[in-house]
Image (cartoon, rainbow, N blue to C red):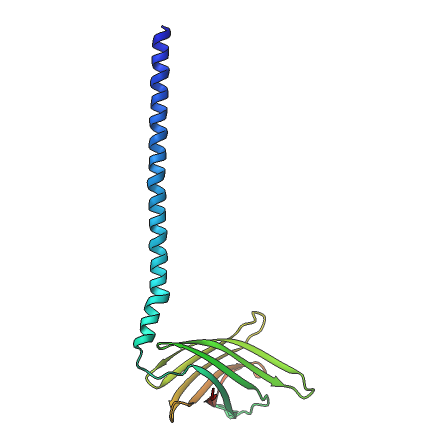
Length: 185
C-alpha cells in the first residue's frame, strides 16, 4: 500500500511539474506577444507622427509661411462699431507641409501703464494661397478665441483678411479686417 501511495504522490508531483512548466511556457509566449505588440505600436506611432510628416514636409511644394507675423488691424469691426482696445499681437508660426502650429502673444498697454498679456496656442492650415488660423488662449480661466481667414498677397510677406473673435464687452461675435506682416529675420 505504501508503494502505491508513493506512486500516486510521484504521479501527482510529475503532473504538477508538467502543469507548472506549461504555464511558464505560455507566459513566455504571452510576454513575446506583448513585446511584439508594443514594438508594433511604437513603430506605427513613429510612422504616423514622424516619418510621414517628415516626407510630406520634404515634398511639399506650396508656399511657406513659417516665421513671426505682426497683426495690424482696423479699428472698425464688420458691424460698424469701433474698437477701443489697442493690442500688439505677434504670431510665431511653424509649418510642416500644409499644417501650421505655433504660439501668439497679444499685449495691451492700459492707461495706467499696466500690461494685459494673452498667450495663445495656434493651429491652422495653408491651402493654395489661403491661410486659416485658430488662436486659443492657453489659460483655462480666460476666454479668448480668434479665427483668421487670410489671403497671402504680394511676395508672400503679407497676409490680408479677417479675424473673427468674441468681444467680451459687447458679448457678441464680430470680425475685423487685418493685415499680418512677416517680420524680417
